[in-house]
Length: 106
Image (cartoon, rainbow, N blue to C red; front, side):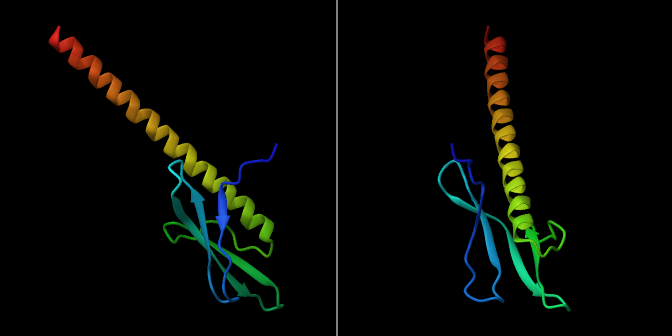
């Protein structure tokens, strides 16, 4: 069984372009959750600088693309968990409101 991929990465047109990171929502739409820029360190290594959807530095600068992928996978899963919790809370509030209306009318 293949593991679900939460984060998707765009292919930059050049080395100076940002990589756009997105996730697929339950309704099939794509949501941008961050970006990755590439910098060249003094010793010539490529360093990846990740930003979340609020343009804040999301993770530590790294030379490992695998670290970037793993961090954004965790971030995308965390966003999905928060979204799911908010949906459940909204359903509970609606149910409580209906029960309160029933109690008032009876």
